[in-house]
Every structure is written in C-alpha cells, then in structure tokens.
Length: 272
View 1 (cartoon, helix red, strand yellow):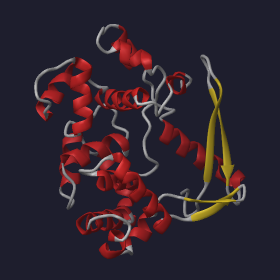
View 2 (cartoon, rainbow, N blue to C red):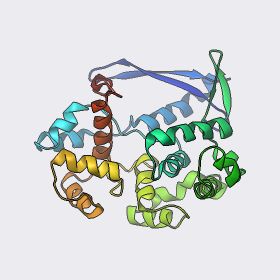
View 3 (cartoon, rainbow, N blue to C red):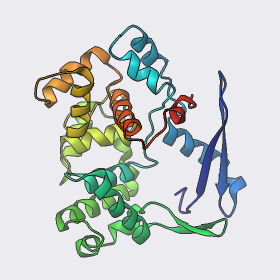
C-alpha cells in the first residue's frame, strides 16, 4: 500500500559490481506520480540504505563469523513495509511454524487487503490495518486464527490506524528498553514479539530476538554450543558481535533456508 492505493512492484537487480543497480517496475493507475514514494518503500523493504561494511570488517577478523558472512555476502537486512505487517506476521506465527502461519497470512490478505490488476492478473496488498480494525474475532477465527490471536490483531490494527501515532511512529524515538516496555504493555505482546518487531518492523539490526527458539537453536548449533539455549546465553554471545545481532539472526535464518534448498546462495551473492 502506498497511501490509500495498492501498488504492484517488481524489483530486479540489473547491474552488479561496485555500483549495483536495480530496476523497479511499477503497476499502478498513475505510476509517474509515485516514483519518490516507491523509491522510499523499496529502500526500506530491501535495506538498500543500510551500510553493513562494519559487519564485514568485524567478520573479517573473526574466524567464527567469517564463513557465515561470506556465504551470504551482500545480503541486506530486509524489513516489512509497515510495522503493522511485522506485528501481524509475529502474532499469526506465535507458537506455530512458518509453514502453518503463511496460509493464514495469505487469507488475511485476501480478506482485508486491497486488490488491483497487474498485467491482467488480480493481486492484493497485505491486510490493511483500518480494515482489520473494523473486523471482529469471529471473522478472524474463520481465517484460521484463534479467538485470542484475533483479539490481539484487531487491537494492534486499531493502534496502527490511530492518526495520532500512525503505524506506531512514536516508538522510533525510544531506546530499545523503553520501546520493548511500551510494546510489551500492549495486550498479547511479549518480549519475543517486541524484539522481533523492533528488528523486522523498525529495522534495529542490533537486536537478536533472544526468545526465538528457532533462531537461538540455530545460533547454538552454528557455534557448537552444548549448553541449553536460553535468552541470557544469546545476550552473552551477542556482546562480542554488537551491534549486528539482528543481522546475524537474519543470516542464520537465511542460511538455514539455503541448507533446505529454499534459497540459492547466488541469490544473496548478487545483492550489494
């Protein structure tokens, strides 16, 4: 969504090397009027403005981190286009696998997203916060959410749609601890969700969501740690790689996808 309109974007890297370039194809009623907004959206989602050269300097001098960094060299820290979408992904996938959560997210988009036509094909945006805010838990339950999760998501949608604090914009100015405290005060939001949203919604790439069981298991496996993975242990480990905990979290997740054949390493190595 850009403003109140759904916009179709197709992004292709057209040039590699020291000065890479991408091409963005826009499907919209008046694409020429959207160039600046599209550029801002793509930059945000793909992390194009993030300078991660410090991460590679750190990895170059760290024999443990270097193989992971080199395997996915050039990968940028991607984030959701809105904080609400980050929250929706977190709430839907709480305590279930991504495989189980994705169909529910797709049904949310079908029910509450805005549609448009792109090359004769109907496509939809992600669920619009204002539309979800007007819904009810029974409607969300029919899409695969528990009643409790439906209540959480509706409340988050109402907060995201609040014109006085549009899409949780006031959180940006807060420190990590204050942001986590503020977010955790929202019904249904715990430490894991708060940290996940700070990373994937607000782009705070120094935050490793330490309560993410899959993420910390991958971290301990990567390091060959024999201790039981826990939050305190993740915090201790990440001190040596500050301020790139969240970027390392994303590397571990994507590396796992590579191992499972879901992503080709060349996909990442072309990204600069």
